[in-house]
Image (cartoon, rainbow, N blue to C red):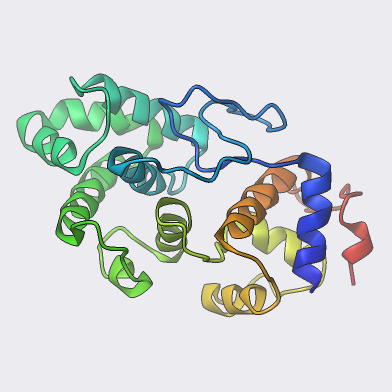
Length: 236
């Protein structure tokens, strides 16, 4: 399948990425561009506990419309407000009530902090109600503040479920290669990639991470992809 061939090519080029980063984890990914801390290449035991799972979930909310470096700053700020130096849904809800201003200032680096302040409370209440159960995609999409990309990120990285994440980078790469129409709907692209990619959740995690790494090198400036010498063999 073509997407497996692309995956293999990207893996050969950039090696294992070790997403999702955990800010308290003393690990790095030296093959990445940008932020390298918190990654765990070839270790798929993450998240290792409920706090790390919830950290991934709130990280996916904070990551909306911003860079990971900004999210990392927001997460570090939040952790500095927690006497236990970890993340929990109860901590988020308690902080929202006890010190709204401190909460908003902590997440300010991630942008849209007034909206995300509310979204983080929504996801915290939802997480508590789950009581350890894996949420369905539809359940996640029913939460205000959770869209397609965020829902898929949560299921893939927090719960180890095989989900295709359709972000701006994947649209740019695969439309440049002639595999998709960049303006097609999220679900149409998601289904097309998913039906032409084989692998377990580990491969899905790596594939998304590799797409981001590749796109950051070749697809950040228009016209996208013209300098892409890695995937040129797949261009139609």
